[in-house]
Structure formats: structure tokens, C-alpha cells
Length: 183
Image (cartoon, rainbow, N blue to C red):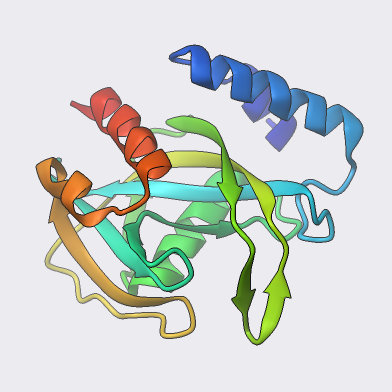
């Protein structure tokens, strides 16, 4: 199944996801470059809620640009296998080597606003991320490593404490929605 079918087949769980899916499908019809950052207005990212085996902790990174604890993930950069991107990004941003999908389907589909910021000494204008997220599992005893150019912390956070760690109100809603699907 290609990435467009993956999104098209996703069953939205609430009104927000229904509206975001509708807008995502319109963007797919309008733009040929959603998989790359060449589209400066809107492009795809793939992220992950990474849980431990007992599903009571989530692996998060302290994202330097957003100045908040966040899920791991990143731009698709032309890659059509969105689950592959999520796994690759988790490995890169956390240092874990063994991570696998709890399930193959998308756990969350969201359109996330990104404020203007500077990255690698270049200003990036405000834009939108079409965020496709997956549920992954990893061993919480596996060593973690910071990816210095993107984050300044990596740790397992008890699920009940995500609201304490995340300082982004719009992301707290997304994390809560995802965690409700897990529990």
C-alpha cells in the first residue's frame, strides 16, 4: 500500500482527525511535493509514540526548536514508507537500536502548525506539518543517546506525566488522544 492509500484508509477517531484528514487529502490533490521540504507551505512528517513493554512509559526527546519534551519523528524527505521514516527517526533521535511497530497502521493523523524558527543558522518560515504517527515499542533498558543537533535530552516518561513535561498545548492534545487509544 502506498503512502496516499495509507492516509486515505486511515479511520479518523474524532472530528479533529476527520477535518485534518480531509485537508490532507486536499493537499495531496493540490501538491506533488508533500513528501519533501521543497514544499515550503506544507509537507509530511512521520513520528512515533514509543512505549515500553508494560505500556506505562513513553520515550520522549527534549526538542531544541520547540523547547519542549516531544515524541521523536521527522520529515519524510521523499521517502514513501511512512512507518519506516518513524522507526528511522526514533533510532536517530533516541539512540535505541531495537524498536518495532506495535501495529502497522497509523495511530494519529494531525496537521501541526510550525512557527518560524532558525535551524542550522537558516530561518525557516512558518508552515504546516501533516503528521502521520505510529505506535512503536522499545526496551526501556536499552541505552539512550542525545542527537545534539536536534535534542538535548532523551528519557522514558511515565504516561501520566506527559502533560508535566510537554509545554506545547496543541501537542498535549495529540499525545492525550494517542495515549487514550493505547490504554
